[in-house]
Length: 280
Image (cartoon, rainbow, N blue to C red; front, side, top):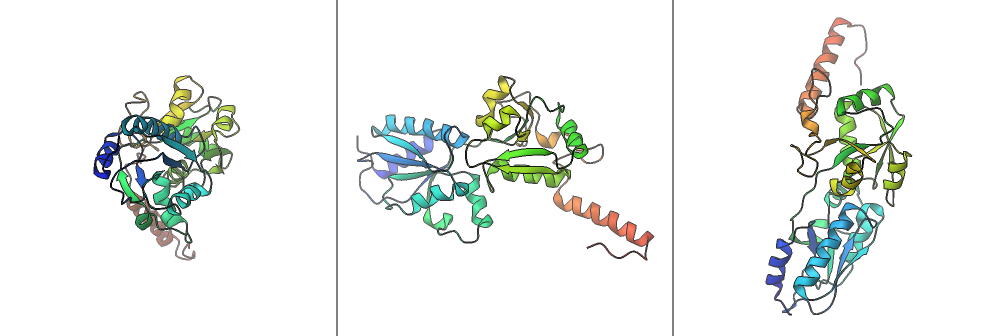
C-alpha cells in the first residue's frame, strides 16, 4: 500500500506513542521501503519500549517494515546526529524525548539545531516520572525519604540515563526544592540492574520503565512527578501533594517564593548582627 505523506502523518498522529520526529520527505508516495526509527537510549528503556510498540503498529498500518535502531550515548545526541546526517527523505525517524529539549541549552557546541534540523510529525504520548527507592531503604513515604536523606547527606546515590536525561533533571530539581544532597551516578546503559541490586538507592525513571518492578515489590514508589496521581500507579501520590515539612509543602512553594523567604531570613539576620559581612 502506497500512502501520500499527508495520510501517513494522520496515521502517525493516531498512534499512541512517544513524540516521533522525522526529517521532511518530498516524495509523492510513502513509504516505498523500510523505515528506521532511531532511539537514543539502550534497549529496555521506556523510550525503547514505546518506540517498538509504535514500530509494530506502523508496520501493520503502512504495510512496510518499521524497525527500531538503538544509538545510545551522549545523552541522545548520537541518535539525533544519525537522523540529521541522513538524507531528508522521511525514512529515518527519531523517538524524541524531553532530553532533546534539555540538550539544546545544556550543550553549547552541538553540530545540529534540534528546532531547525528536525521536523515534528506527532506528539501523542506523555509519561510522568516516578521516584523509586530500593526496598532496603527505610523510607516508606516521600517526607520520610527527605528526612532520611537529610540525615544521611551525600550518602545516597541516584541513577540516571546521563546528564540532561529526564531522571537527571527531575532529581536535580528535587534536590534544589528540598535541600537534600544526593550523589548522581550517570549510566550509559541501563541502570535498572544496579538499582534492583541496591548498588544505587533511588532514581526518577519514567513510569513505563519502573512499573513492573514496583508492582512486583522490587522497587518502592514514593511519588510521581505529575500534578495529580497517575492512573498507572493510583496508590502513589503526586509529589506536589506531599509536604516537604510542616511549613512548606513540596511543589507548592515556587522558586521565587523560596528565594524571597530565604532573602528575608538572611536580611533579618544581617540587621540583627550589623558587624557581620553580607553573605555572598
